[in-house]
Amino acid sequence: MTLYVGLDVSQKETEICVIDGDGRRTWRGKCSSEPECIAMVLREHAPDAVRVGMETGPLAIWLWHGLRALDVPIDCIHARHVAAALSLQVNKTDVNDAFGIAQVVRSGWYRPVAIKSLQSCRIRALLSARSELVAIRTTLYNQIRGLLKTFGVVLAAGKGGTFERAVLTRCPADPLIRSAIDALLEAWRVAGERRQRLDSQLLRLARSHEACQRMITIPGVGAITALTFTTAIDDPNRFSRSTDVGAFLGLTPRRYQSGEVDISGRISKSGDRMARSLLFEAPN
Image (cartoon, rainbow, N blue to C red; front, side):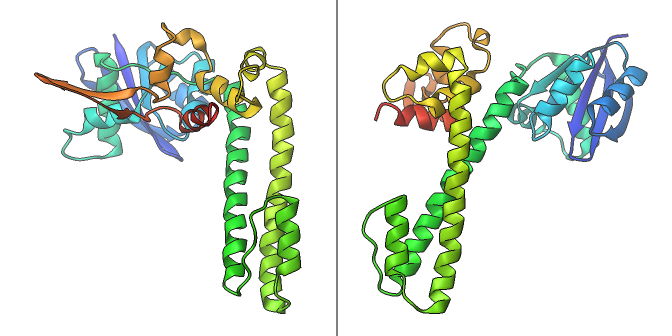
């Protein structure tokens, strides 16, 4: 019997629905959202499943790699495509969602999402952490300047050591104000130190990566931009044409065409936000 499976994944439990080639439900149930648990249930209730589908989500990468390692023919479907397919359902429940995903898998009317390698995900974790530290440091910098303006202290433009010396020199002697500024300044300093450590680690990774070494030779492209781009692309073989990369990163214009109307709009911004932002800054 030809079987198809839909998985509606949540943080604790996963709703599983098994259907046959005619779309009739043959089994449904729940299990823990662990690759080993899901694979065990599928071996019992759908040992010869042709395809198993789940939508993108926070656990998708971990589950996909775990299930693939256990020889489960799992496909990941974009959550927007699943939402469009399930929008006609009167009642939204985990049971109905799993059944709907199984029907989408059976129809084959979807394009599986390319899941990044674990190595790319590991590097992306460092890049994301660095990005957050940069944002935190910028927020603290603005908070300190804004707080001092309340008491008539307007700092001149400056960053790094220049900014820190200016804050310490011109901060009012009031102990309450000094206490608040010192707390923010210490957090700003620690965030900068942590970011520098990540910068050093990312620089070493870029130097050991052949594609990154080539990208760094391009004017305006550094280690961070090169690593962000290569991890966003991950496997270049999945692109049939080089021009597809721009569309993948959301750098190509949207288009609306109907009858005599043909409008080219702004860039779609549908791809990787971090990669798109850094590629835009690189030539400037």
